[in-house]
Length: 354
Image (spheres, rainbow, N blue to C red):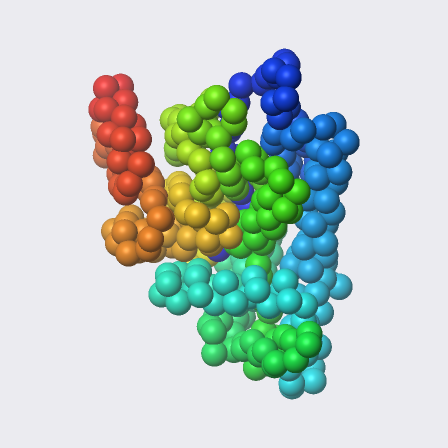
């Protein structure tokens, strides 16, 4: 599972002024959910823009208190703990229910490659990074036994208002929303802006991005993407509107144990970190879906990942994997669908031209 966001650059024209009666471009930047969250949108007044930005950032804070697995008193950690101790379902908020429901759907779509119940395994490997050795096999085997949809269930009861519940099957079951939380927060931020009549907007949370209608006079928002190389500038650009893009990769987040390079991305099915370097970008209608699918496709690999993307409406992907071995002249494998096909060809031409 992805535990950080790969930064995707955003190239935008900063307007020094606007014609009379036209919305003005506003930009805000704060750190939320441990990543920089950038808002860029067009609004009618400075006060309205500031109020809208404050509402978006407040929602990020609210959702972080709800979904963080680092906070022992977050709603998700507390709900898992209380349910496990009581052996029964506990009440949760509508928002937490919604993101958990979406996570379960993503699990089914990816055949288990995206699984929020991987938390016990993730925590073992976090310790391994600190101590420089693999988790004890008996600990790893126990943690793997806690992974899967069968270990937790959601409930909804009719009423006014309806009641939402979470039940975990064992006291050690924990749910890690790191692969979907920022995407869900972005979607909520876009919802807030649209409710305030702001129809041309971009939200970038540490590289997970969603945009709405294009800026005035433009065809879309120009977004820069990354490859396996640690480049300061974007490796390619896409112009998009009314879409989200998320990128998952291990260019910066990896560790070595006994000369084996391990990714921070964990395969929930095997309990093992990935050992093949990769970077996966996903375009989807919403940021939560793009966020989860980028993690899932990273685990699935290029062949199954491409098949999954092609089976889902309005989902496109770019999958770049490092060559295996140390063959001289070997180049990364690049697979793509949809608008990423042009990017694939451009990157392949650049690789072979070097």
